[in-house]
Amino acid sequence: MKSENALFGLRIRAVREKQKLSREKLAELANISTQFLADIETGKKGMTVVTLKKICSALHISSDLIVFDIKDTENSYITSMLSTVPPEKIEEIQQIISMIIKLI
Image (cartoon, rainbow, N blue to C red; front, side, top):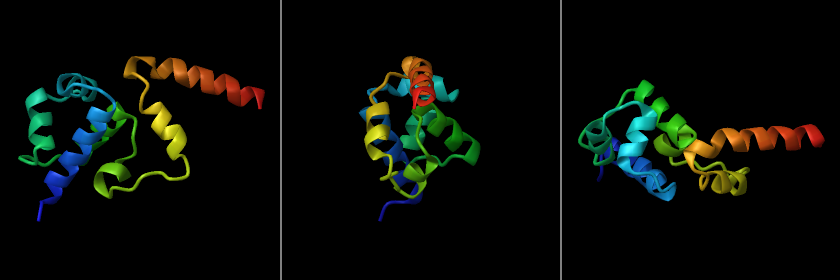
């Protein structure tokens, strides 16, 4: 049976790869070292809640996905669409969504 740290690491890696982010880029976005991220993804090291929050923020996901493997089924279509947006374009997407909401 895999340890919790190993499961968390596998889930982080899966999301990172789905978003087509390199380990180096995610580490940069989360403000952690590449080696530390590698150790987390391989289950060699655990992480604090602060580090989990940094990684989830950088990936634009809920920590529920990493900790409990709970996917937001209500918004899964929107979430899956947004997960394909490059991180540097997120702010533009937020502005577009704000404009659409104002029009509704």
